[in-house]
Structure formats: structure tokens, C-alpha cells
Length: 159
Length: 135
Image 1: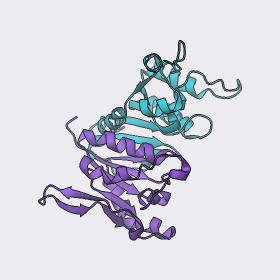
Image 2: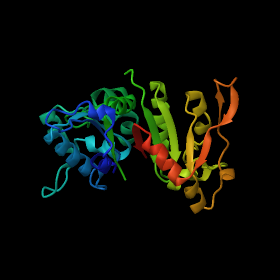
Image 3: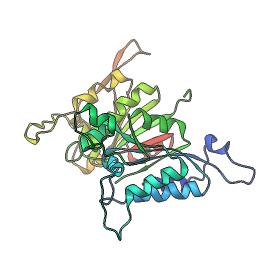
Image 4: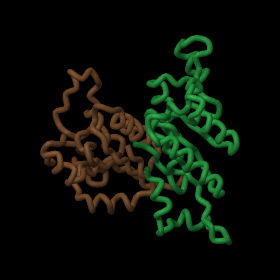
């Protein structure tokens, strides 16, 4: 939802100014926060389109962090209709192509039943119950704060 | 990570009915360990997060409002509440719970953390930030 901030910003902060290339284009290091799950809200689609477009323009994506229901973007168990887009697969493929760091918040994920192998085992959820999708990893909220510190801009997609 | 940035947590939603407020507070508490300049702002229904006398017993969910009073111990001492959002909901500053911190630069004097600011003042505060997390 704050994506427009980036385009609108006529006043370039020092952190952005110093990465201006000789050709005059500004390369920006971005972090993305996705706060809504797939399909119910537009946020994840918008975040995906924005991330893809930023990468195509040559910008760097430091990290994509999934919080609140946004963690539901990272389950491999969704089966959307064949004539619709597959939001999870979009993210996984983009991550593979560009070596993206897709991080799912562990506290938010556990509430909503998104588990990796380690967490599934730790909570005795049974063999094969890990459902984290390829390209995603589960970690702590510190990764979100770090994403804010390290990037030139943190762009939030939510409701 | 030597650079210190200004983080603003923008709280827009009512405390109960959705999880945004609780999970926002969870980020604030974790983020406090990173030694950044942190402030919180409350706009729209977010102002209800600071309403005093919250009682969630009949909702069957946890009343997390006491956690706001502990923020001072985490070094989070700036809570901005938008005046217009209060007025639009028939609230005044007197309807908010008292939240204070001990100012270590002033003999640990107890000072209020809540600042009621106008919409235009808050816009100015937002312009000064490096990172705005909107929940």
C-alpha cells in the first residue's frame, strides 16, 4: 500500500543518492513486507508484481518478509483453480530465479499452521506435515527489523 | 548494523476483531532489541488500542493492553495519538490509559509517553521517519 511512496518521492534521501549510477538511474535496495494472505486480498499479488518489476528494473530486493495472514502465501498445500494464478508458485519461482530471501514469521506461522520440517517435528505434528513452500524459510521477527535497517526503503503491502 | 534508523509503527486497527494490533505489538517488542529510534502512532480505529478499562473476558481473547504500559522499560517512550481520530470517535485524551516512562536523562522522572498530536503534526512526524511499518 505504500508502494506509491517510492515513485512519488522527489526528495531523494542520502542513502538513495549515493547509489545513483553514472547513467542517472537510481538503484535502490528494497525490502518488502506482505501482511495479507493470498486470494482474499490484493496485497500479495501487488507485492509480487512490485517485486518482479523492481527486479526487472535492476533494483535489489534485500528480503521479502511475510507477516500476519501473509504467512499463508508460503504454504505448498494451496490448490487454486487451473485458470487462476498460483500466488504461492509465483513467489517460489521468483525466489528461485532471483535468489530471493522469502522469510515467513515463525510466531505468525505457528498460529496459522505453516510449518517447516524442524517445527513439524518439534511440535509432533507427524510425518509429512511440514507445508512450507519451496523458496520460503521460517525465521523470527528480527529478520523484519533487519530488513528495515538494511534496505533503502521498506515497502509495506497490506489492507 | 551500526546505522540507527527512525522506525514508526503505525497502528490503524481496533485492538480486537483482528490480530493486527497484537501482532504489531509483537514486532515492537522484538524490534526494541535492535537499538533503533522507535515511536508508535495511533490513527483511525487504532486509537482504541490505548483506551483505558479494556475488558476482553466475554470475547475469550487475551487483553494485551497492559503490555503498552511496559513499553517504557523497552526504551519505547513516544506514542503519538492523532487528535482527529479521537474526536471522530467521541474520545478525548482522558479516555486513554495513562502510560509513562522513566526519563533516565532527567533523574528517572516519570513522564507521559502519550502525545496527542494533530493530523498535520503527525504527517510531519511521518515525513521524518526512515521506516514506517503500517499495521
